[in-house]
Amino acid sequence: MKRTGFLLAAVLVVTVAFALSAAAKTTRRVVDVLIIGGTTSGTTAAVAAARQGVTTLVVESTPMLGGMFTAQGVPAVDGNANLPSGLWNEFREALRAHYGGAPALATGWVSNTLFEPHVADSIFKAMAAAEPALSVEYGFRPVKVFRRGRKVSGARFVDKAGNRLEVSAEVTVDATDLGDALPLSGTPYRLGMDSRSLTGESLAPEKARNIVQDLTVTAILKDYGPGTDRTIPRPEGYDPAEFSGCNATAVGDPIPPEMVITYGRLPNGKYMINWPTKGNDIYLNVVELPYERREAALRPAREKTLRFIYYIQTELGYRNLGIADDEFDTPDGLAYLPYHREGRRAEGVVMLTFDDVMARYDRPAPLYRTGISVGDYPVDHHHKCRPDVPGIAFLPVPSFCVPAGVMIPARTDNLIVSDKAISVSNLINGSTRVQPVVMLTGQAAGTLAALAVKAGCTPREVPVRRLQAALLAQKAYLQPLYDVKPDDPDFGLLQRIASTGILRMTGEPYQWANRSWFYPERTVSVGEFTLGLHDYAPQIAVEDDPAPLTAASAADLLRRAGGRIAPSADTTPLTRREAARMVDEALHPFERDIDFEGNLK
Image 1 (cartoon, rainbow, N blue to C red):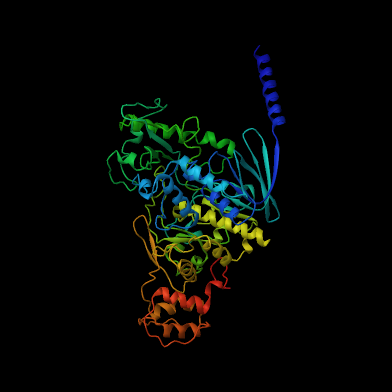
Image 2 (image 1 turned 60 degrees about the vertical axis):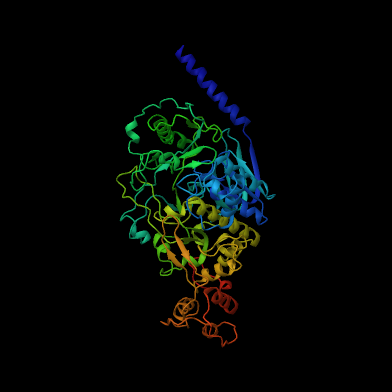
């Protein structure tokens, strides 16, 4: 009987598999731009590309658009509060309109912009639906990237039922959370900690290590009212000692237990549970696992979050807080996907390092000139679950820009990289990985893809200044000017001049919102002006002259630099804003193209 039962079961399995295979279908699509992943950057890449008038398809494995903000359950914004750039600003304004103003979003203490994941999802979907050239496919994951020679030409996807989606595209964007299109396309990448000899960063380890940051499966809890008891069943293996001491900040300062909850308080009585200190962070490196094995490998992360929820309900006394029933349609009610803080990083035509951010004007390659997105968050690495890894405690940086070349693989054409898979060092990934930076990098990726399609060239052949000009037209920042907002009548002008380095920014590491000042209303000295002008026109010697720059002295220097400008007798000191106008009118320096390293052509 056992043998007969085994044979019957085997026949049934084969029959069911055959039936599923027979029922599966293949759909083929042809578009200008394919976005692999409706993540935080994938969504903005898709919207940006479609707004440029090219047909765009974004393929996402979950039912939500927005990645970290939505499907991964991290609706608390890290950084860029004072850099209202491009689609990040558009998204934030939509949140403010939904909830009734900026104060309504300042509900927790980890951020001044917090919201419910399903609201963000609805905003992203509305933005996508408003673009006639944009379509979205949900429930599919990539299994193959089509490549011939150096050129990528689309990808194949499958869903859980075995249905296939095959997409041909002029340009493909890898916007996956872990850089999954990189190995599928044969594009070289790095994973884990970079060695000091590779990046030149003194803070990098001496030897490379295959270690990524801790990840988190987040939960959204909901207040079901006083007197209610929403305690979940006691999870298997629960021990309250696992979370003892959770009432401390990431740097170890003690805090009242209630701050563990109010940290991520969202509107409408909800709470984000994404707590690093003795909370639900966990070390799991699943990056190289195939999709079909990841779910099982990530099970310990989901179980740890359930144990932490039970601890919050029983030990901290919040029995009225239960798993929200209106956010994620998952069996356990937790986020669809884990919050991965890092994955693969492409080998790009350039690599941004921590030192490039800290000393932007004193580097061999002036990468800042090629900026396409901006950020201001400190270097944030989560390694508390790996005591063998030295801690990296929120290294302060000046606000920074992400250079264009990090999106371009060195040896693959017609593939653009966004999200966390851009070509940066492991160290500075702690700043470039946060949501607003990723959103803006996605906007640049989508814009670049569209420009390449319309020009009939590869993305690497699109001039950097053409990409930057297109982003400026979208009110996106190229440089992180803290004191020049998009409503400034000279916003575009000052962004352009700052991107040439003729008038330099002053960086300032500052708490959680690092800054770079342009100081448009300050005067500028002759010496400071010659310092920046020398890089553009080497015939101008750098002078140590503290005298204020005047229209007369500026006109003389600009004429010697090759500019077309009439002499002036005006000896009134110029503000930096006025000097920028003179530079722009005399030299049009932004019109002079640069390479991906920022060198003048």
